Image (tube, rainbow over all chains, first blue to last red; front, side):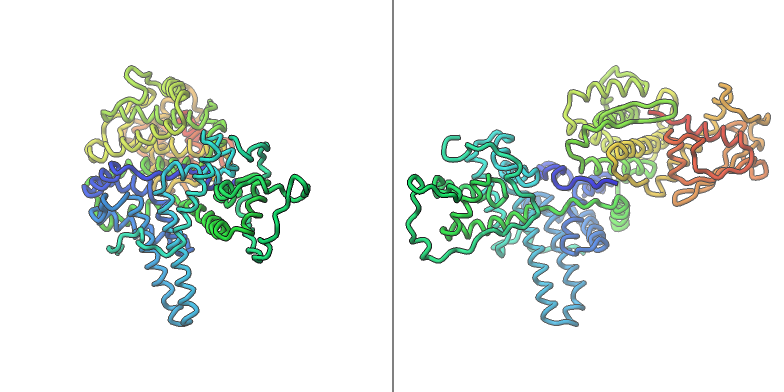
Amino acid sequence: MALKPRGGGRMAATPAPSRWDRKMQQRLARGEETALCELYDRFASLVHSIAHRVMRDEDAADQITREVFGYIWENPDAFDPKDGTMRSWIAALTQRQAVHRLRHSEAYRVRADGARSAARLEARVREANTAARADFIRTSMPSSIRATLELTYFQRRNYRQTAVELGLTEDETRRRLRLGLQMLSTAMQPPQSSPSPPSGGVQ
Amino acid sequence: MNGPMGHEPQSEGDTPAHGIPLPRVPQPRDAADDTLPAPEPLLLPDPAPPTCHFDHKTLKSLLGAWALWACSAEESAAVEDHLTRCMPCAGEAMRLREAVGLLQREDSLDLDPLLRAKVLKGCLGRRPARIPVPEWASPYDAETARLDAFLCDLGDPEWEMPVWLTWWGGKRELTLSGVLAHLGSIDGLVATAIGLDDPLGPGAPHTIAKRTDAAVTRCSSHTRGFVRNKWRTQTRDIVRTLSFAGTSSSDLPVDFTELVLPIRDALIDRAFACWIHAEDIATALDYPYEPPTPRHLNRFIDLAVRQLPTVLADRKKAGLTSSTGWLTETDTPGRTLHLEVEGQGGGHWYIPLDSPTAITSEATTVATVVLEGAEFCQLAAGHRHPEDLAAGQDGDREAIRDVLCAAASMSRM
């Protein structure tokens, strides 16, 4: 049994055009089951991977996936296209719900163990939030920069090979790689404003 | 490019493998080091990397590529040497190298295909759909989604692999795009039955072989992304159109030339074909592909079994059966074969052997066959020869053979 290729073979995530988002929202509101199916097919792996990254547990990630899609299906109007793409909304929703579940599931340990567990939990939450911010930055950075970074990193090109493949000058390739990583590195700082919408949780 | 770099041919070896942590940002050296006079390269040949011909601006521009292990050995050495003297660059280098870790996405875990059904069921329990997918269309919805998710993980080499489609008495080699073209061209018969456009355009041929040929020819000039998208969009359009039409459409006939099925069965048939060809693809690539959910597996078996009496009768007329039948009249009990399918999605079916209209009964059961659900489906797909089947058999051997051969003969491309 062979393992499937990872990362490199996957199509680059492109932000959904807002027309798709609005149409999807309308269809969900209308109660179209096929809209729910399409929503799942498009975002299930995003939701599950975020949940899994926070919880580090398959069953918990499955559970959060159920909760998130259940919430969206019941509350399609909670999405506001003015605040960003549906993808970023769903990612933020999932992140919040996963962190909520993590705090809940770790609460007994924190009560029993005290400060050390609490610090460990906070470190995990911080790490998860950094990863979520990095996701957001990666999907919202200019696609030209993202493509350059991803080709270099996932396909293991050196920057000259990347330059040839993308038809760029070597100067421009170096500039994009540096700029892209600079953007990404801001995820490691505590955010001035979180990409997550401020309120409205998944019940 | 003009300038000090780019004179060396690049090789893969310049880029260390990813995943190996290389925190090679050196500690800043003592300030005293920086006050040493720079060596004069022209006068004093130095065995150390010739770092002097990179100016500060160039070194700074290399930091991103350096953090990604994507510059030449000479450039890496020059950057690392520079980082020992330049605090701002050293700070940035450290930050960028750390940021590289954030590029790694963790969305590549395979989702459990069964999760989809659970999530959808949970959602619909919280808020029933106002425009539901007809129950008989859900295997098609699930199987097409499963194949699409499988395709999502495939890279260039996989798309180039030859895929063999095999059925009873035939086989054909296609590319992966060709398989999707084939699936889409036959789905197109369902599409046209419900008023959607024929993917092959007006005046397209009608038989499965000719439609496949036409589709494969058309698709050969398109990118695989286009072909995949076209196939997937049509599957979505079919399910969506049927959702809006509601259950009243379930009797609409779909003409597959050699047989006509009501659309509620045609969709089961197409779901079955989608699964079987997904498995053909997975087999060609040496990847695992799970069987469908038990509920859908049961529908596939049931459809095949319901078609069996007619197929048996046709084969009898053509002299392709060996067991001697009874002369039964319509609606009277006739010889019966008891098919027991084991495992989840299995069940008991009683197949009339003498005439499609004969009544089956336990008292007139002349043979029993016991096998696994997936095994039966492999037989009906023409992937397993009746002689090679792992099946428990009891009773009239010839009757059993007739039924198993009839099941295999139903398979198509």
